[in-house]
Image (cartoon, rainbow, N blue to C red; front, top):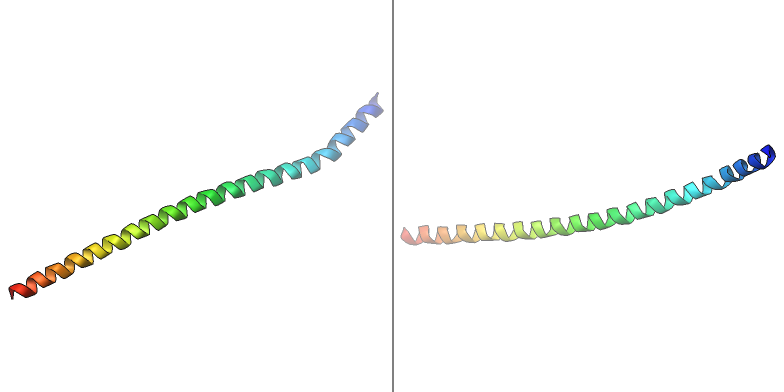
Length: 75
């Protein structure tokens, strides 16, 4: 009885390490894909913010030009 139990323990320990490695690999790949998706969403958000900032700066420059024209026309 103890021999069979020892054999079962040995087989369980031999097969558990490759399963743990495969499980770690699968979890790592899932996390990598998830982080890639999050990074892409973050990059899209940053891109939208930068485009907004460019339009805002262009608007401020346009207002400056109009103010300069008004000031120069009054002089």
